[in-house]
Image 1 (cartoon, rainbow, N blue to C red):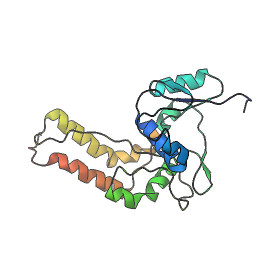
Image 2 (image 1 turned 45 degrees about the vertical axis):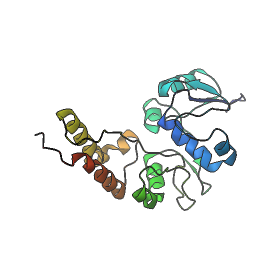
Image 3 (image 1 turned 180 degrees about the vertical axis):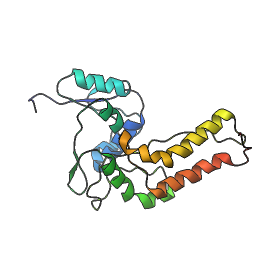
Image 4 (image 1 turned 180 degrees about the horizontal axis):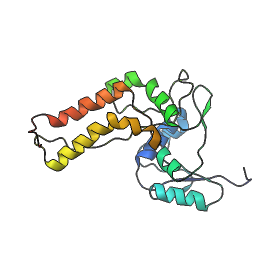
Length: 199
């Protein structure tokens, strides 16, 4: 590593990626938890802000000594080097779909009660888990009747959380465990209540 000061690059706009990272920082560091805290956007104590993942990527590429954060699929798709992070077991783990799946598995019981459970800093028993993992959520309006466009969205989501999981790892995402898929399917089924078929 070159002997230059490390410059932190963060998102200047609100983002789920920021929420995952700051939730992790809040869980592992009391000072971070009590000051910047966690959320889609926080008041960063240091660093440079950039808008969007593309802005973070460009700033890191153009500025020597920078470190930033990106979703794994975006980092891999753009050939960005990634860092191994020490987890609660003391293991340095690279971000991979398998390491994220291990993190998800460590929280399966909690996820059955609440799908919004953060999957950061899993317990030391999950030795191969990447400690900064998170879900991507889709927000879909719950309706009593459904139009063709809404039916297409519903059908796509049903595919993505079932058969589409077979493509997850190839796209640098973790495959959802069966229990999480079932919970997601149950939530999706709420959209089809009192809906007339559109076919």
